[in-house]
Image (cartoon, rainbow, N blue to C red; front, side):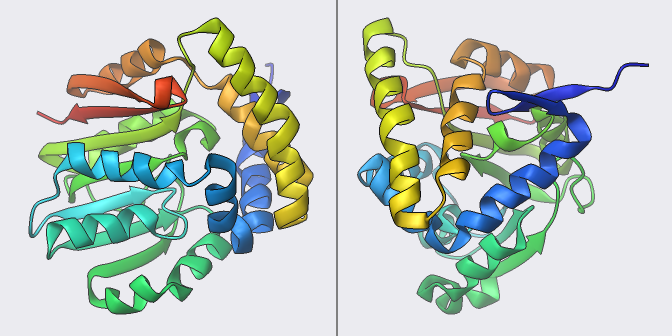
Length: 247
């Protein structure tokens, strides 16, 4: 029987190796992750995350599961918008969660936050536990995104909302070529200069190009059981927001 394989950037690897490699990448860059996000996107990732909250419209008392939640960016925004509620930040990589817990917001919101090491494809939660599931710039790093989407559906309550923020494909060939030139030439160099890690950022750039286009990924969301699924391009499609409901 042939071994199942998947993408790790442009490399083909056995499925059971990918999670360990992804942990290696994010463990390596954890201490510089937030600084690099600002540098790579020129701060635009903050605008995208705010756009996610605008569409989500958090309500008081909601329970959020933020998968691949890393240093807590989405959870902090969610709790501020909701006024009161609870957020669980889940990440495969403990050093990312440790960096998040050091942030000032984490101390201010400590009673409303949990930090959990876990796998998006096998969530350590009961069925129908959360009102909202978010994953931002994380699903392309999951070995089997379809399995992660099925788990999202499982842990959401009926009436619950899925929101995915992910890098995507620009629907203009010339713009895509310009973006690729920037991504492949500049971002790994930034990774070397800021985080001392060129290889991890080379992987992250490659993983963006391997991720399905907007229509394909929207189909995967529907296949996982979500209804009223839609997407919105951000910054010409450099990033994309996806929304779906468990009805």
